[in-house]
Amino acid sequence: MFCVIPAIDVLDGRVVRLTQGDDRRVTVYRDDPVAQARAFVDAGARALHVVDLSAAFGRAGLSVGQVQRLAALGVPVQVGGGVRSLDAARRWLDAGARRVVVGSAVADPSLLAALARDVGPDKVAVSLDWRHGGLATHGWRTEAALTKEHVASQLRALGWRAVTVTAVDRDGTGRGPDLDLVAEWLAEGFQVTAAGGIRGAEDIRALRRIGAAGVIVGRALYDGSLVGDAAAAVLQC
Image (tube, rainbow, N blue to C red; front, side, top):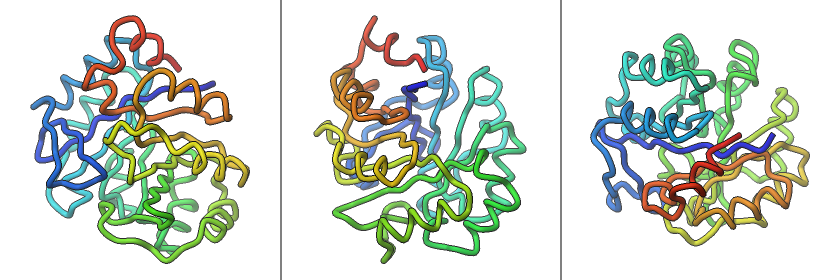
């Protein structure tokens, strides 16, 4: 079932959107992440994608209490940002998150293997964040020297069949999704949830047409490109 998931990016306790992952290009939308999550759920969202940008940048971020309140809203919540250890993954799962999201772990084979063995691919969403052909890690501030083919082979061997694919250079820009990037990962045999650059309902329909399993939407919801009945329609899984 195709699913449209609202993104809630949290930086220093506030709901924000960054442009191309740059924390110097930040737009603040709300002071309370839980209130924003509740608003999305009230509008019809059936899942939430929460990113702790502070943790991704190496700072203190979301609390266990906040994740517990997010999980109590009654829809599946996946939490990412700075999840670079088994303990970090277990912390959010124990707090009620349905899944944790990892990105930098792709560049750490031992951690990725431990997550697959001790947590399980069903509880770990792997985010593949691509910028100009390179895999961006550690808050999108570094790039791992890994090819798509190597990453795909590694993930398949460890049991992952679904991935999130983000076009970092389009994230927060409203330039539209990178359909070619999504198609490449579909051709590798993965179920793909796409992110980055979504402008509105037509982009969502285009991703669905090429076979994506879902899409994560941020700025288009916050800035009003998806409003009213259109927003309610696309927030359904």
